Length: 85
Image 1: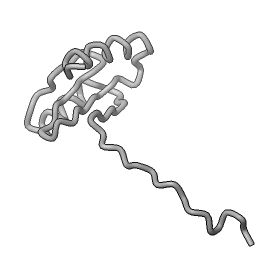
Image 2 (image 1 turned 135 degrees about the vertical axis):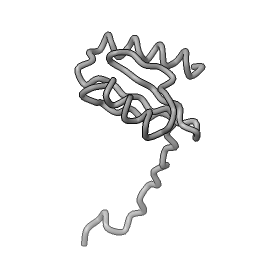
Image 3 (image 1 turned 90 degrees about the vertical axis):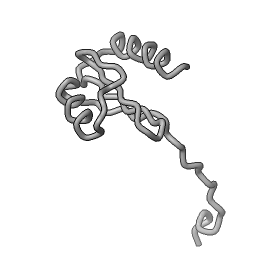
């Protein structure tokens, strides 16, 4: 008999995300696609990043797949300012 078969499992809390980050090949092209899809412009856009605020309060970020660590840190600081963090 398997010793682990009847042991209770721990419950895992399902998170309630407030930020979704997608790595994209072309942030500008992806931002245009999502602006059309969502019916609103990004709240922030640059050549390597775009961010949309959704009606639910969730933020959708589009990062250039080639953006390096320093670039991501600059955007994180800017996102924190925009989001009030």
